[in-house]
Amino acid sequence: MVNPKVLSVETLTVEVVESYDVTRTYTGEIVALRASDLGFERGGELVSVLVKEGDIVSAGMPLAQLDISNLQTRRQQLEAERARAQAQLAELEAGPRIEDIVTAEANVREIEQQLVLQGIQLSRREYLYTEGAISKESLDEFAYGEEVLQAQLDQARSNLQELQNGTRQEQIVAQQAAVKQLDAAIADLDVTIGKSTLKSPFSGIVSARQIDEGTVVGAGQSIVRIVEDVAPEARVGMPVDVASELRVGDIQIVDLGADRYTAKVTALLPEVDPETRTQVVVLQLEQATVSQISPGQTVRIDMTETIAGEGIWLPTTALTQDVRGLWSVYVLLPTQENETAYEIQPQTVEILHQEENRTLVRGTVQQGDQIVSSGIHRLTPGQQVQPL
Image 1 (cartoon, rainbow, N blue to C red):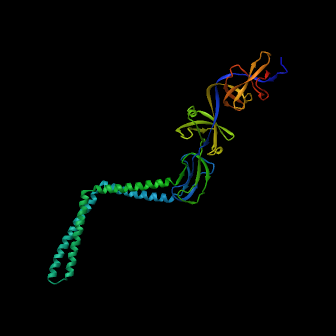
Image 2 (cartoon, one colour; image 1 turned 45 degrees about the vertical axis):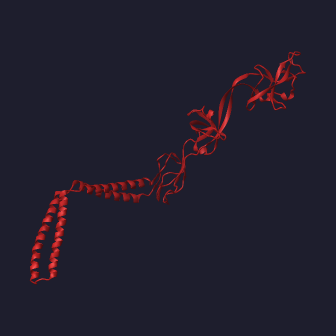
Image 3 (tube, one colour; image 1 turned 60 degrees about the vertical axis):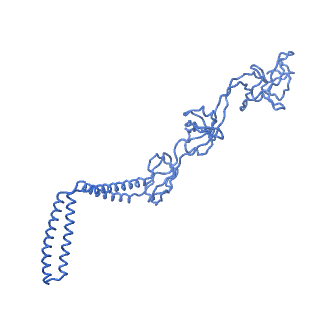
């Protein structure tokens, strides 16, 4: 029976727990995605831009093209020079033809005959000179003609000897070097032609097209801007003991402003910050898109940790603070005078953990004790109450 003179109060029965979960929030930020302003290594006329803003491109995809007509003409010239040099090399490697040797021998014989005839005529001119029939000048002309023929004979014999001995090895080596030099020039030109096509260095989205066709551009001038099209990454610093509980591949929920995203743990960086004693956890946001998220945005991740230790969960309304700043609860103690009435006495407790509307405490309160759960501002120690 309810005694109208005894204050009725709401109560609860104490239940001791062996552990409790604590949720802590850690913050990090979205790391910057790769972005590049792309241009050519050389200048020239821009003849085509193959993409527009918003296009999705893959790594190695052509984006723009410079005029290469002059390069193609130069390549044709080098190809012709190489063909000629290669033919000369083949001729040197094959050696002299028999026809060339026969011709050289005939040339030697012809000059020898001319030289014999010149000698006879010179002897006659010397006789005429002694007789006073010709001048010294005429005699000198015939003598000079003999010297010229002798020089021609020496050269013809040298040419014949060279043909008979065959091609010298150093001539072949020199011609091989000439062919290789032309090969290198063609290869270098091919590199320049290849670099006249601007290609995407990675997969992404065209965020800006800055120049149109027909413009003469300089080396390094930006043509298009590419932003990497991948799920953004977040980097969050956590205490080492918390980070050690995570594994690569674990799925976590991260908060970004008012939005929530599923994220996968992709890496646990080994370095520990010496000042904050935290370890960086790298997460890839799987449900986000590039357009929704910007580098530098703050992300939050809630981690639940189970802590071992006895305690009692109480509603925050069951706690009162005395003048010394200590926290206590009112425990119901039976009275001898009235079986339905209880006397309340404060018991000091220690706060272990607080949540929004409940608090974990420990103290002298025992399993099964009844305590006042609310309305404690109306109560005083020793007052009699009865449970509702």
